[in-house]
Image 1 (tube, each protein chain N blue to C red):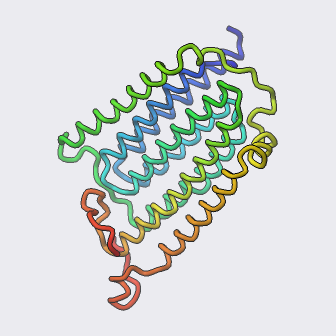
Image 2 (cartoon, rainbow over the protein chains, first blue to last red):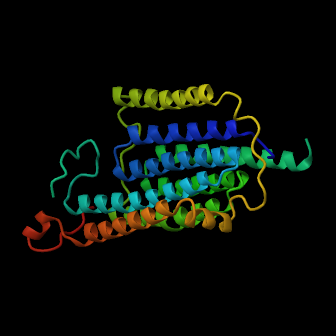
Length: 102
Length: 187
């Protein structure tokens, strides 16, 4: 395998996960919280693919594809909830969203 | 170190720099529209790393599914809601933000320590893989042989998400219906 070893990919993946977690924790707009969640899921994907390459096992790639499906579903539901919030005139701020009652 | 090796290193460093810069941009931009656009750069540079890990099919699916579908959906919703968001650092550093920085750093350090303790020397020599590794044919074969249950489960998850999205989008919220019809979206 040419280029950097698996450990470098794992470090990149961990730092990316940290950036995503930081975004989820500091932002109050639910849209950007969802975007930061996508970053965290992608960091997980990078680690899965790095391990798949390390051990020469295709199952890690199957896992990564499954995570992408979950991420797409999560984006659909999350955005649907945000649009429903705005139709109810709830302020788009995760700190002020204290109830899930329709 | 031959020319190919140096080229791979240059591509890797470029992709990682773009990855971190665009990731921070997603988190720190005030306008959610710019955040969503930065996510496209983030996903594209991640796809380059996937290619270097010989995961060609996953890299292609990543660009198609994320840049093609998810980010476009984000942009539509951002346009529908009007581009406004909190400034990430408005009001100076509060206790919550300091804790957020600490928690993110703690997660990163924790994972690095846990992996390096568990891995030992097993992360040094990557396995030899042939051309077929990560190809669509190999992925398809694994999906219908070893991972058939996961394949069927993902289709059900997607169906449920699609039905849920339609229900969330078409059913008017109770308060809006009580007031007689669709409300004007908040600006």
